Length: 160
Ligand code: ADP
Image 1: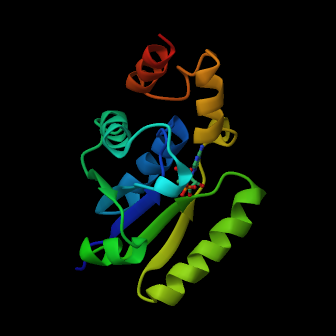
Image 2: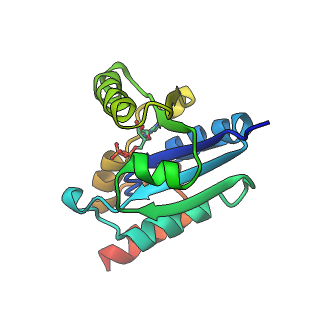
């Protein structure tokens, strides 16, 4: 039987426990999940690609069917090259939907064989976003419940 391989793309600047919640759910549903971290220079990420990859690897070390990869090309091309058949995204609140709807439409236009699928995190993570974590972390707020300890350490070091 063909394997179901899901690519979970995003900027992951940095990866949060909300992202990890989605990955944990996906790891039970799909044979393999690839966390695909977009270089996204246009978003001017706080953490460079190598650090975002390393934070993601540390965050999913407890799962065995997950890979982490950086990418800088078109998502649909990356997914095809990896043999993936699913694009996975997370949905938190209603406002995520409009953007995700557009993105899924565009990806379907580019690659009709790739199916977009969406998972919702536990309630406790519906308000968590990388941008809020960056804002709170930069101002010295406690983000330890929201991210892996490596990410907390990176924020602490950035303040010195
Ligand atoms: P992007 O820049 O592509 O939006 P993100 O890293 O912000 O990348 O998010 C990647 C995916 O993870 C998106 O589908 C986003 O909706 C989802 N996501 C982000 N935060 C959470 C969370 N707390 N719970 C569930 N899904 C989330």
